[in-house]
Every structure is written in structure tokens, then in C-alpha cells.
Image 1 (tube, rainbow, N blue to C red):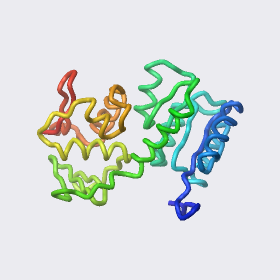
Image 2 (cartoon, one colour):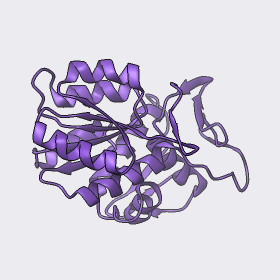
Image 3 (cartoon, one colour):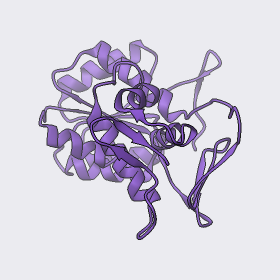
Length: 237
């Protein structure tokens, strides 16, 4: 990790804006700077990938319609290479587009035109998730589910001795389910506890991330780790 610059003793949050519409770039940059964020801008996907390695941003604001790289493919690549929070801001309003972006690793999805205040509320919520769950374990520091071993202090997940890479949001969701093992957690409960207040109706977020966890945790032929209660929620047996 690159060392973060400090301002008044606090690390500066760095935001990478990936957007080719200069009017949107100017709006975002002005408001980010006013609120004290260090802002870097890329007008295409190739430059964004270069800046990702050079600048190590905390948050990426990503437009899907770029001149050189498909936005969905860029989202996938950014997620594979970084744990930065990815907030898609796009004119594409279809539910399929939103679900596709979430499946590829986006943390949040907003449509244009958007409210600046809502955007900053979502940035704060995303930063909370990517910083990880700072709670000290109340009981056991190591949890086991089948052949999955979860170390809460180091926030690491292992299966049969092999580390499984989870994003901070994925880890928070898994921890919530495993610490409440045997209990059904409703969609609203999980969304509020992991994503935060105001996300209780965003069930597509939960479906996408449960799907991602299952793909990473459940080996072929093994018993399922996460069970679904239709129209209600999820639980770990």
C-alpha cells in the first residue's frame, strides 16, 4: 500500500474519478476538493488502470460509458487489482446494468443525474466498509464453517489451507452471517448492518454479494455454506 498523505494529522482520502464528460468531472472535482478529498481524474479506462497502480485510490467513481474500454470490463479489472471502493455513476438506468456492475465487484451504483449530497453519503458508507469491521471479537477470534476458517482479527479466510481473497464488503457480510450462525437474518437486517442505514431496500446488492461469496467459498461437491430462505433472508447452518 502506498503511504497516504496527511492533513491535520489525518490521512487524506484519495478519489479517482473515471469520467469523460468534462461537465461531470468539474462538478465532482469541485465538490470533492471542497470536502477535503484528494482528487485524481482519468478520462478513459487505460489511464485509469495506470493511475490505479500509481495513486492507490481509496474510492473510484466510475462511469460505464468510456471511449476506449467497456465500463463493465474495466469494473471487473479494477476489482481484481484493488480493494478500493467502486461507486458506479452512470446514465445507464437499467436494472440489468446495475446487477451486472454489482456482480463484477462494484460497491454501489448511482444513476445520472445524481444528488451531490447522496453521493457523499454513499462515499462515507463505502469508506466505512472498505476500512473493514473494526469490532473486537466478543467471543472466538477464529470461526469455522465446514472447511472454511475465518480469522476475525486479521480478517482472513482460508479453505483447506488456501487463502481466499474477499473484498472488505464481502468479509463484513460473511462475518455477519457466521457470527449469527443458525439464525435467519432478513434482507433488511443484512443490508442495514453491512451497507448501512438507507440501503434496506437494495436487495439486488445483497443477492449479488451472496452470489459472489458462494462462488468463492463453496467448492464443487461441497455442502452449501450460505442457505436462502425465499423472500426472507439468508443464514449459515
